[in-house]
Structures are given as structure tokens and as C-alpha cells.
Length: 157
Image (cartoon, rainbow, N blue to C red; front, side):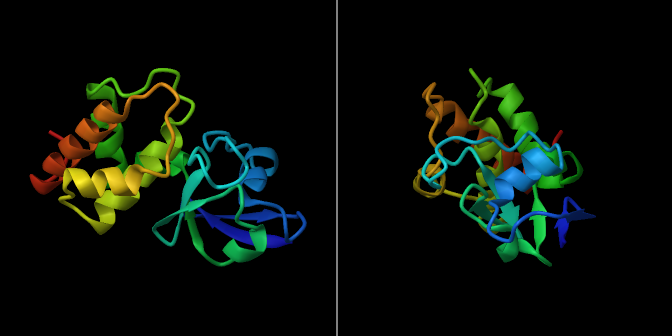
């Protein structure tokens, strides 16, 4: 039995220690917002936060996250930065197919928490590990810039 701290709640899962966090989230806990993309930590669809840092859940074993604070896309509705980023995503019409968007948002939230006023270069560098097959990168950058501006002014208006 492994005890996890996910989105501020304690969850117990009985899975092998080497099971990737992604599968525990999706298959054991029914949290399907985090997506499977490549299974090799190269596309970013499975991005979640561990202690505030963006990680790839497809290659992170359950044993590595026990006792750590895990946040998923489902938890962003209760996160001020997550709320502002999600609103900016909507206002900038970022999503097309939407498959990569949870991972994109999680990476953007992590970026804005560590770098509240990122330059275009910092945005591009932070987001470079997240692949969008639809090519909405300019809208992703615009949404992050908008969210940074709103957060600097005290939140979403």
C-alpha cells in the first residue's frame, strides 16, 4: 500500500512500487485528465507537479512520489495560478484537439510559479518539452503571457 498526497487529499493505492504514477492516477484513482502520450517522457502529455515542479508521470514510479505533494490538472481549479492559466487558455482559443492541453497547462503553471514574468525565450524553453500536434504554440505563448500579466495585476479580472 502506498499513500499519496494528490491535489491536497490523501489517497491510498495498492500497486507495485515500479508502476508509473500515470497509471495509478488513471487506472487506480480514475483521474483521467493526465494523458498518456509517448510513455518515454518526451511529449509532455502526462505532466503533473511533484512538490510544485513539473514532472513526467509516465516514467515516474509510485515509489518516487510517496509522501510528496502531487498536483494534477484536476487540482488546478483550486490553484490560483492554475485558474488564471486555464482562463487565458480559453480566451486565447489554445486548444484544438485538446489531447496535450493538460500537460501544457501543468507546465505553464509550473513556469509561472517559478518565473512570474517570463520572457518569450523562457516560455519557449520551458514549454519545449511539450508537443502539440496541432501546432498551437503561438497561442500557448500568448496565453502564458496573458496569464503572467493578469497574475502581476493581482489575478484574473
